[in-house]
Image (cartoon, rainbow, N blue to C red; front, side, top):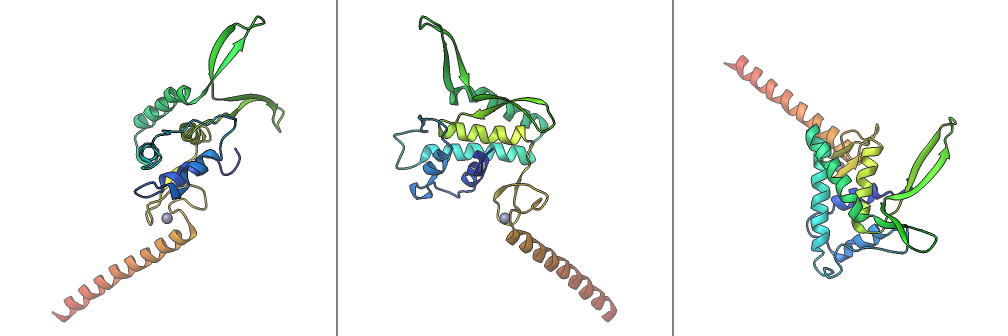
Length: 204
Ligand SMILES: [Zn+2]
């Protein structure tokens, strides 16, 4: 998957606080994942309030929260929801016969690709077809499930992030450092309290 991937976009999107504003550039950032000539907007009449984007962002947050701390049953439910919604956000493809009649219709989530990997195995994969805001979100979720990625929520700043060996708990170098300082401060405070109690006891 190319970078920035749909997942990078939806993590950024989930981290927008409060109201979504046209100046947040949401539309442009979603549309950079466009793979064809068409683009389905969430709601073309909703340009002023960006309400549809806020509803979508809340849905994304709900899904991410379940992936972070939900039960296995809830995670399965999200997976089922994604599988069920993907056809609506996918393009309809038609298999046309020689005389022009439609022989078959199906929803395409991607363009199939057949290749041989470095170990000589035959692999079938798909290049995503992304033709709308909703499709970006769904493909990002697929990216998480298929690549078994771990998502986290930073305890320091509250941001959603992709967990990695370097960033397991916090989202950035700054938050990592802040958390360490906080921990040092907390243990120092504990130590002082203990000292104070001991001195008090000795004084009595
Ligand atoms: Zn953070």
